[in-house]
Length: 89
Image 1 (cartoon, helix red, strand yellow):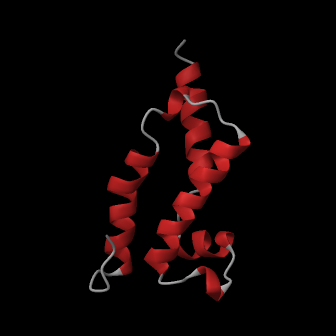
Image 2 (tube, one colour):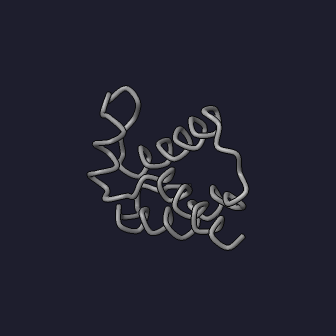
C-alpha cells in the first residue's frame, strides 16, 4: 500500500483520509477493552512505522514516531468522538 515513490506528506494524507476512517468505522458504539485498545494501537503503529520508513528492529518508540509525524493519538480521537456521541443520547 505504501510505495517508496510517495512522499511522507502523501503517505500521511493517505493515513488521514483513508486509513483512520476505515480503522474507526462505528467506533462510537465500541466497548473499549484492553485488548481492543492494544489491537488498535498496534495496527496504527504498524502503518505509521511504514510511513516513516522504520521497522521494529530500529527500536524507535511509538511516541517518538507519532511526534515526528505530527499525528494525533488514535485512541484519543476515538475517546473524544465516543463522548461527543454519548452527549446526543
